[in-house]
Length: 228
Image (tube, rainbow, N blue to C red; front, top):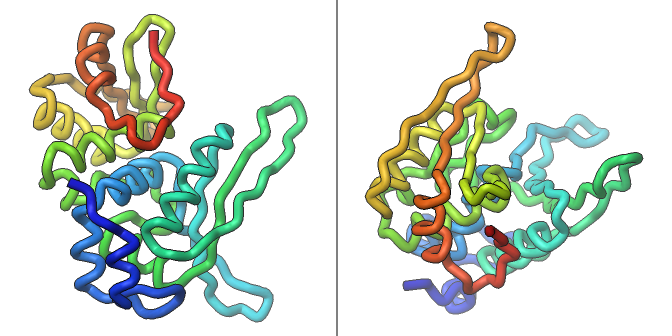
C-alpha cells in the first residue's frame, strides 16, 4: 500500500516551509515513495554541515549521481513527499562523466530526514544504516528501499550477479537482514582492510539469486534497471 502524499500535504500538516508535524512524519514512514527516496539517499545523498558568508548555519539537502534520470527521479520524489521543489544542476568534468546533482536548502526537511528518517548528517559513509522503520516494516517498503540503494550504490554486473560495497558495516549487515527477511536468501558479508587502516564491506548476490530478486522489484517509477 502506498499513501496519497498529496492528500497528506493538503491536510496542512506540511505546506512549503511550515513546521512539519510528528503526525505527518509518522504517516509518511508508511510511504513507498519515502522508502525509495531513503534508499537513494543512503547511497548518494548527503546532509552536510555548511555556513553562509555571515557565519550562519545553512541546511543543504543534496543528491549526486552521473545518471541524470536518477537525479530527476530524486527531485520528483522530493516534491511528492514534501511539496517543495529543489534545483537540478550539472557539473561538467574533464575526461569524466557529467555529475548531476539535486540541491535544496530547508532546515525543516533537513532535520526531518536526519532525526525522524534516521539519515546521519555530516560524513555519513561510515555510519549510515537502514532506518529502523524500514528494516522492521513490511516487504514492500523493504523492496523500495532495496531498489533505491541498488541503483545508487549497488551494481549489476555483466555476469548477472549483483554486488554492494560500502564503508558502513551497519548498512551492509542491515542489507543482509533485509534480503533474508524478504526473499529468504542468506548471504555472507566479506570484510576488507584497506591499507591496514580502513575497512569496507561487500555483499554479493549470485546470478541465480539476482534472477529471483530483480524481477520482484517495483517498476512503478520506470527506473532504468538493466540486467542480463
